[in-house]
Image 1 (cartoon, one colour):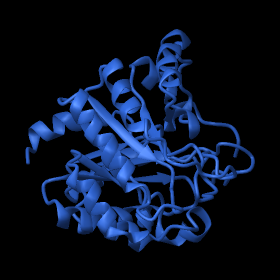
Image 2: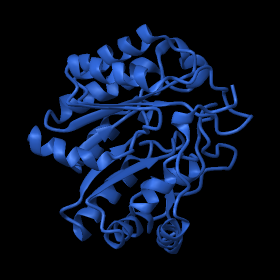
Image 3: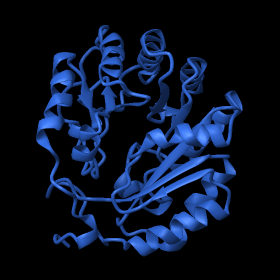
Image 4: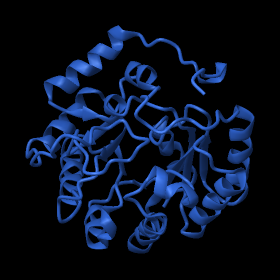
Length: 289
């Protein structure tokens, strides 16, 4: 299945604006998941002068066959200047909301939690009104490391379940579905006031019933925000797309998610974890904590 349907075609980005964002990122030696993971929304987001920062990378210690982030290179020591450079980028881009994610760093005892903390702290110093969302790995189940991240008080804690349990061995072989659910549960236990968020990619062979069950499981651990989007094969080396899900089906999942209690569901073919993430600021006004 190589021909994309009409609803997956995106407008060509205005590269002059994209380039201005890239210049800032290059100047500060920062990585973005927009570029490293070949996100289809890079043009729209860069045109809007926003980006999802990828820290501790770009090399990842896991080899998930759906992901375009490099896993063949050896992870490098953490850059002590990265937190400050990231904060400066937030200021230079005039971001109201920033998303910070990372590669998996299973080589580090805390999974990189300390670098998340430093990034949050530096942003607070330079841009105190910017709301912060962290999209974190599973930290290999290190809940002390999770507690350290939460103690830095990001507004949103995001961790993706990615797919349904039956596909984990094939799609996310080094991950564990129950561990991801437990992370989200622990986050609410440690900080009941934080907004938690998760995401699912579809089109890998899951059923409608399986997607709905994951949504129910996420609500069982009091997850607040959900994103659902179409998986797109980055290259011939990655898992093939099994099905292109229609916009109507995404709408049905969105309605179901709202019915079972998510505060916000973003469900469309081009939705990604941090796509229009700044909308959480409106959510925080509607459901203050």
